[in-house]
Image 1 (cartoon, rainbow, N blue to C red):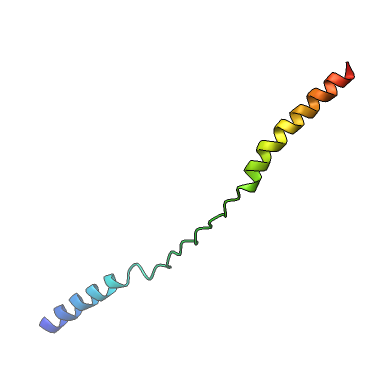
Image 2: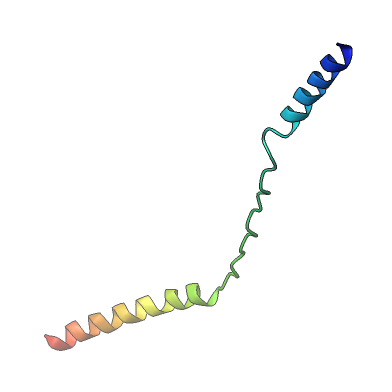
Length: 63
């Protein structure tokens, strides 16, 4: 009877160890770092006033 109880206890312990199965590993994607470009921001600071000056000149020439 002791062997039967021991076998039942071991079978219950072994079945709960594998109840969940193996989970798939979670792999996070590598972060992407964008290179900072200073040329685009400085060019935008020059182009906008020049376009505004051209629009004002075109309106003045039209009168």
